[in-house]
Image 1 (cartoon, rainbow, N blue to C red):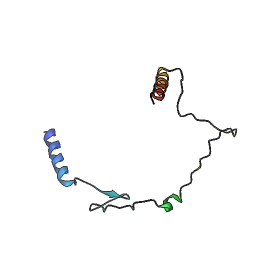
Image 2: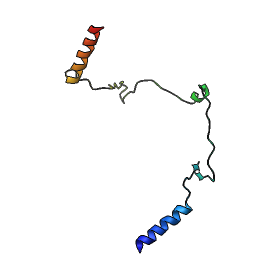
Image 3: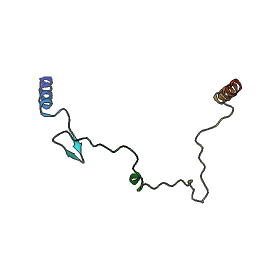
Image 4: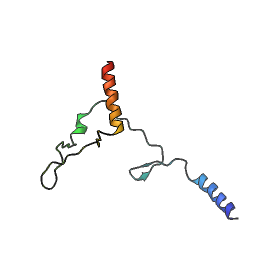
Length: 93
């Protein structure tokens, strides 16, 4: 009996709820929103509001913090294999 009730409720909700709901700026739209087409090419005005600082990070003592992007283990098997392949390629060319 409970299963029949759940099946019937699913059918009711399927009929009442639309297959797609569109929300824009926090409100539910009645119809499909129009597509916004952006201009092709570069617009320098869009970059005016962006501030970019390329200075290195500094700790509380004013010392520059150095970051390394990779851990380098020059004795690893992978590093040695890559070095061998680079040498082999250089010799072949």
